[in-house]
Image 1 (tube, rainbow, N blue to C red):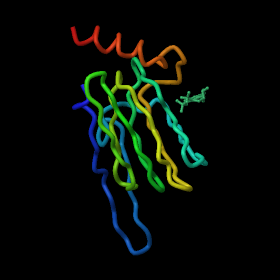
Image 2 (cartoon, rainbow, N blue to C red):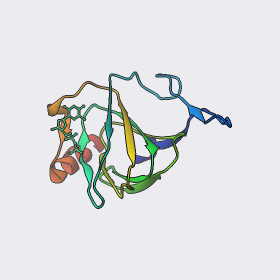
Image 3 (cartoon, rainbow, N blue to C red):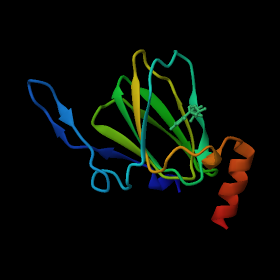
Length: 137
Ligand code: TYD
């Protein structure tokens, strides 16, 4: 399951006037975008996330600065460092994820496949492990 997560190389137009990158849903990312949110002014040392989603898949871009995204499928975990505006991390639904090591003035843009739904969150790691184990069987 964690093997389904990966860094996507987005199109980039390098230009001496300034660089440009973009995403088109279902073309550069594998889902339709239902929601966009961003994380900013994250104080040093803070962790965001710390949960899984049952249905929501996400695409995370470090528009500015850098941060780490830890992914865990209950079996294996992997940490990705995002620090390029033209890289995006595809996080399929059903993975535990945490974001930390935010640099000063970093800006995380998250494209999401579903509307906000509080019932889609799994915030308890033990419960997540139960669901992950059940889905493997
Ligand atoms: P949350 O996803 O819980 O952040 P984190 O996982 O980093 O703790 O979001 C924090 C709050 O923001 C939550 O209480 C509800 C609100 N929120 C929305 O209303 N819509 C959204 O799309 C998101 C992502 C959060």
